Image (cartoon, rainbow, N blue to C red; front, side):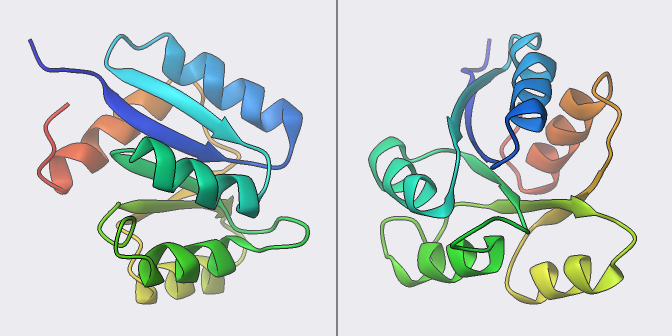
Length: 130
């Protein structure tokens, strides 16, 4: 049996944070930690060393892009795979995130029943079998 994959969710919107938490905690394969903003995300990423970061793009004070730049600058967090989560009506968000090194982009709104499967596929894609 494989160990649980630790995911850091960075989402400023409480209702979305709760939806993702409920969606992923129902899956036995994930351990979820959450951050409400970019600063908290950077602290938790250094401390917890997650297997994956789910990162909102549009947040107050520090955007997801800013968080990604800081994660990549820090040798302790540079290799953590990042998946951006944003509205898909803006294709620039997906393009920009992938150019910065994100491994995938999840569109909001997403189907909470399929989120776990989508995350599992991303782990398989990055060779971290879940």
